[in-house]
Image 1 (tube, rainbow, N blue to C red):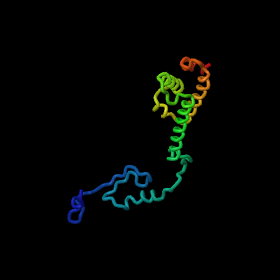
Image 2: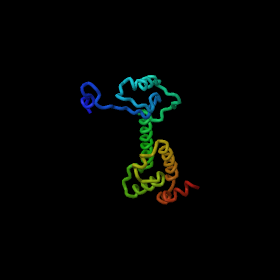
Image 3: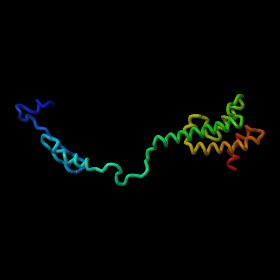
Image 4: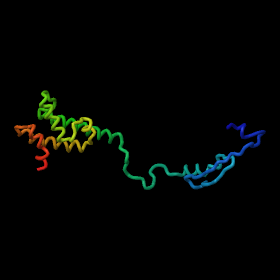
Length: 163
């Protein structure tokens, strides 16, 4: 709609209405303005300009959205724990298994301790959970290294851990 459609020979040809259903300042709620101008909306502008800047009343003191630094620190903690888990396997000669039997043993251990064989699923765990599971893995290997029949020990590990 152009100004030519509204004005004809300098006089209004059509009327334009502004219906204010609700405004946050409650100063012009429910009002109807014919040919609205800035002066009609000035009370809202004054209200917005008068709002405090900075802390708002009853604002939480802590930021609920993690900062980049917090996110980076959590990711770093997960990476550190994952590397420590890999190191536990290395220290117990199962880091890079060469034989099919070693691969099977490592997979069985991972399944018993972590409840999955998916590397991605393990990497999705948070740092404290990975830390706990790493400690479980270290406890497991303490007992595992004293056993002769390693496969049988892995099979019955839950029963041993529960006892």
